[in-house]
Image (cartoon, rainbow, N blue to C red; front, side, top):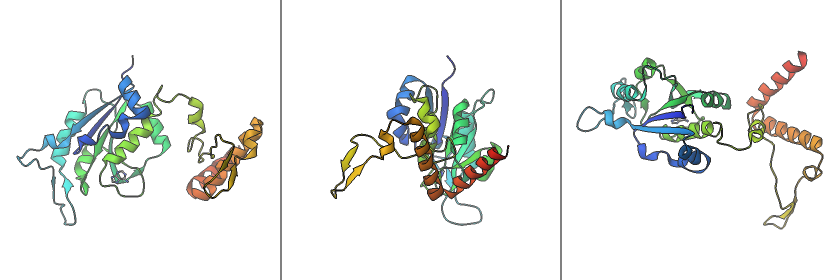
Length: 246
Ligand code: ADE
């Protein structure tokens, strides 16, 4: 059997893991050995009796910065210098935004080494020395990299072979075709909301016309993308035009 997809996670809060990744699809896949998670406590690398891992920022300013020597020691333990091909990712709001394409690449690779920072961040020199890729999960600031690591891993693990049943539902979902997904409906077909308003399922969906349903869904996906995500929409339109010119 091929080696399982392997995540090594460096953190000051090892109790946060596996957290949500121990549940549902990811949890089942973890139990089955589809992927593995090694959590490493950065504080174990502290060299003084206070266990200090951070210090004041050079140049002044608020907060504390994680020391390069401590983080370096943790990375030396995490990374096998002989044959570790896994990228080192540092989670930070300064990073390149995570997208489905990067998630897919990570799922196709051997795994990932994730560095979670707290306080104001990690000394830049150790990130440079290890050529860490800086990744953000969105334009907002979390209290640390840990929830961002959970987000990244969740997105990757569901793509690992055998984790999700229906492969078709993957290719139809948001972002896989450059569009947000169409809306979903299920039984009951007639439903009355709390204001007494009757809310019927769009008729087309119960018509049995697969071609027309497909068209309707595409229109819905396009409309949602145009309204909610002009950035994605621009990209989609440009690609469509390119396809027509060829
Ligand atoms: N750490 C704090 N905020 C973050 C974010 N938005 N993405 C990744 N890591 C973070």
